[in-house]
Image 1 (cartoon, rainbow, N blue to C red):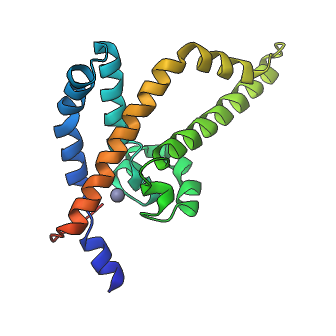
Image 2 (tube, rainbow, N blue to C red):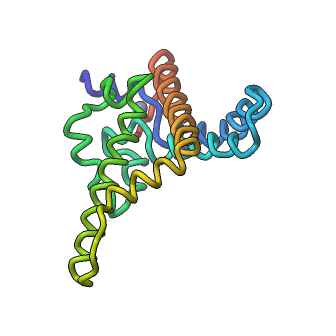
Length: 177
Ligand SMILES: [Zn+2]
């Protein structure tokens, strides 16, 4: 019964998607006109907003639309789901949860890259350098872009959390994440 009440107070995945798309031009306008950021920076933030709403959503903590969008790579989010319970502070926290998700994904991708690189270097008998150097070089060369992208992802996740809070305040029927 508690679970039923709980699920009734959440927005559906479809609604989250629709709101994410609907607010995309608004995020771009606020970034560029509101905050007077360059057009390219506004574009990066807007792209981040879409990624945050559709792919790196707080609802990755459960079997949701964003989770299934990862297709064959959704295994990445299984350990995350074991740790972050649905709608807990780890997934639906306002300030840090989206950055934690980003950090977790970056760590997994770095691990996959390093393992793949070392295996291929071993097979092809080339003298391998540390793949960690590649990752650090990439980070230092693209840090501002990555940070703005992170801000956009945070915005997309924040809007998701706000919609969850709104639909908790005004629950309606027929919910699916
Ligand atoms: Zn949610």
